[in-house]
Image 1 (cartoon, helix red, strand yellow):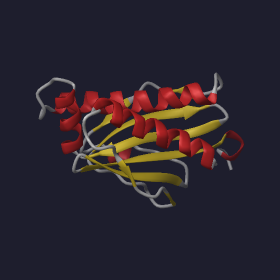
Image 2 (tube, helix red, strand yellow):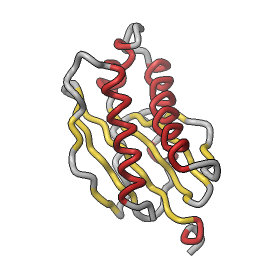
Image 3 (tube, one colour):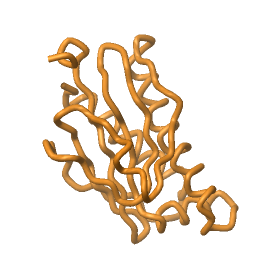
Image 4 (cartoon, helix red, strand yellow):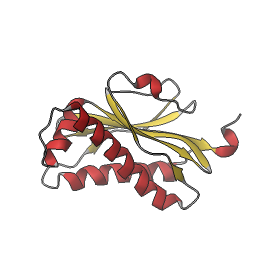
Length: 156
């Protein structure tokens, strides 16, 4: 399973991204990360990547339309379009996992980022346990979900 140091990398990368896209706004406020054995949360949208290497599983950031629309507006586009929300989901997962890839080294393989919309929660597959980090940002919420385990544990 992922250890505390590795989880901290994902946490920091996620918080850093949100601080950089809105430097004049209050920083994101992370909640306490927790381990969950049930299906993890899905808030309507997600950007997800599958991971393989010494660790295998899934990383995704799930949020509501409001959060995505704020990010879209900060990027200079008109919020409210479904296609832009899905593009933003891919951007989020790509940035977060790419930064983590640099930290973990060349054995870390990341799938092409995918976007999941309101009817796509069933497309998520994950190990039996996931770490979930809730975050509040600009009066909206998102959750970083990390479901990774050691390759040797993936088949057992």
